Length: 74
Image (cartoon, rainbow, N blue to C red; front, side):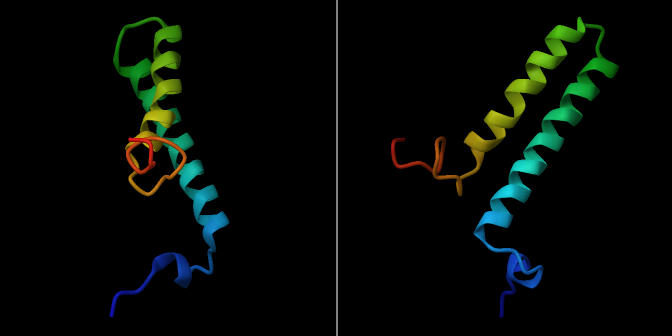
């Protein structure tokens, strides 16, 4: 029997969406910080790349219905 982790944690659809949005923001911040620390590019470019990361992560999520791979308009 497959258990749903979201139900186990008592999270409904709104809480699940908020948590996924939070994780995308953390991913974007981590990529921005990593790019800024590892590479020798201008900070403005690292911020621009990090700002594009969260929307790209949402686009890549097949469960998102707003836009991207999971939307009906593909």
